[in-house]
Length: 258
Length: 252
Image (cartoon, rainbow over all chains, first blue to last red; front, top):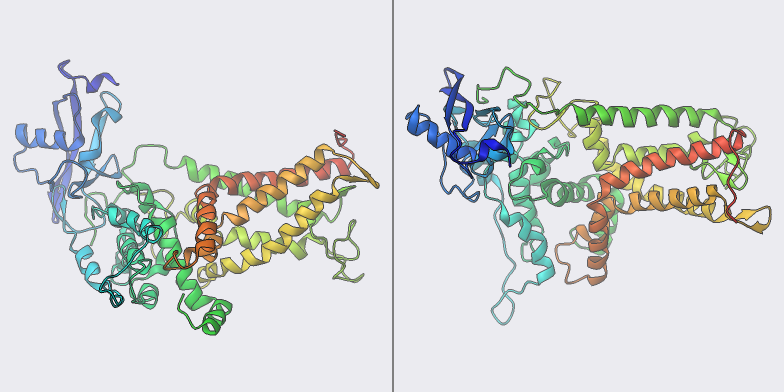
């Protein structure tokens, strides 16, 4: 373990934290004592306690489950509460900035309401009617596949890192983003769901904007294989429906939806 | 509107994010240059009993080793051109290679949380990138080519009518095996095997198949690189034997 992480040796964390709001701001340097086992969020709290009581940061569980403390640490989208200080070189100045894709409110806090608007656009779960005995049955092999998608904590790191909206603000109205492709996959692959969201995916959700560069998968703190298990399978379903005449013909002959 | 903190900078990342795209440019660039050169040679692609995979199946009557004589005497260009568009198209539209070249050649984006090079972006919603959707057709088209590559590997045991094994035999078998792994680990194959189903319970056979392909698919990137390098080395080996630069090592 690097020396910097050892408690009681006088080691300091050198931080460069973004301070400002929508009208402007700058990076400011802070130094705080480093204790063993600290994560970046602890250091931000120390800065609040010792140097900047007005430093704005959104956080809640400090256990990687609420998805509140998303930020960019040394330029990489991370949960601050899951980024241990002993992963950095001793003496290294660590940069903490707000997630870039969403409008800045103040310091490390951004307005993520874009995501809530997109959530509203996803057609909800539409279960098939109950069986004769009044129950609905699902089988383990069908549930295993969608279970992965339910791990999402809505930290929106995938939304933040996705270059479709991160670097091209004008795409926001026509692109739902990886988090909501995961959501749609969990519904489309659900054995009891009866709705059809392929047209929604192609048009309103803008699945075609995704060029599968996999950054969403790289930053997911829940290790959901967003690209391989949700986006690409959905793209393949869209291909079957809209770009594959042979599959369409076979589907018509078989009389079933894909 | 984006958060203003890092809007003006390409990235705040301090690691060597540029290394991976640079290596991909080098790797894919070298392969593209070598394979184009080899495909245009129209010679030294057969050293009995080995046929270079770049020229297999050889479809012209003028081939040094004819697989299927579909093109008559009039066809005098390289027979590789007749066939390479299929594996080339399969790789070009492959979900892994798309990631690799969008990042490395288009800088769209060059790495995660590093700004795109282009100021506007429409992804795969418009021509030409909307054509990526035909990937599964290239998958289907690759299957007969795989069959020919396996056939080439089998007849590589035949040294003038007698059974034998040369280093080239092993090279051709490994090539057919790696290209088969690459093809069957593809995301489209995974979908066609069972990914398109909403309920696996109703189709246990396809569920089992989907499970196998899923395991392979997790290694698709690694298989893509190994098979790419190996197919190039296979052509190089046959070419070196055909030109007499090296002699095939006979094991049996």
